[in-house]
Image (cartoon, rainbow, N blue to C red):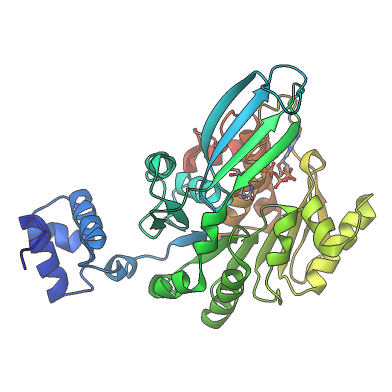
Length: 370
Ligand SMILES: Nc1ncnc2c1ncn2[C@@H]1O[C@H](COP(=O)(O)OP(=O)(O)OP(=O)(O)O)[C@@H](O)[C@H]1O
Ligand SMILES: O=c1[nH]cc([C@@H]2O[C@H](CO)[C@@H](O)[C@H]2O)c(=O)[nH]1
């Protein structure tokens, strides 16, 4: 059989065969090739299926692994009153989204090592997502399917900016299966934390929940919408953080939250269901947080007179919380990290604010938290 590898790929494959645990840095030194080129060669070897995974890289690190949606978000802003059944003039925009991907980008921008596990088509939408996301996260474990469309979220906003209809093409996420998790289990075991969104099928959520419990890996669950709340695992005791909004809580518990007392009670109910830490968000009214062996506390949102676009506020909030929690900060600081990141995000046009970095985040925290 003739090899479809070039000389450098053959050299690197030989070195990996000699020592499957060799690091990229060591490969770079022995082969005299830069570390970034080594990463590219390894990607090629994975694509050609000479190498099945990157265990040798992950032995050096403990990444945050985000599992769930990576979408193209399309927004259509109606110029006039919308009339059904005919053509309406709009202004449109497109960006990359998906809850798990948005959180992965926030955390990547904050300097964390992040791996995204998702499923996509092999289309131009995926290419766009790949190009805009790859600087901030590892996308090698996204499973691609030739005959599927990459996930998309399309929102039509009326002339006042309120949502008229949203269309979610997310069939491809049915392919984020327990089998895909089993295939990736070697590196899932090394995760510093697993963040999963409810775009994943229920069986996968259940699998991840048992897996994190067995290997003692912190698990964060982020619901994406009320209709997907029935995908929560049957038992919630493996969940370290559940960050959920008011509507999703109402749907899951079949209640109405009309005032602060009922909001507080909903947090209590989540804790009674076994979740270790929970936050119920409520837009400009802020958040109600309950932690293991602690009191239930309300935190006001940061006043934001100039809201540009609220898309991504929830994802930015979650990312701030996860980031500071992993740094073992005090609960006050953890929640405020979420509030600050959400506040800055809704003042930006982008779903994930472009100026976010570790340094910028520290500046923002100092500016806004007295
Ligand atoms: N109008 C606002 N003013 C100030 N802060 C806001 C506003 N809207 C959202 N936020 C901040 O963003 C956080 C998350 O918002 P929200 O409760 O709407 O979550 P979400 O429904 O998951 O968001 P989304 O789906 O729009 O990303 C809030 O807790 C708050 O800190
Ligand atoms: O069902 C879903 N609806 C919307 C989203 C995403 O939410 C993001 C905003 O929070 C947005 O980027 C959209 O793609 C998703 O992942 N699943």
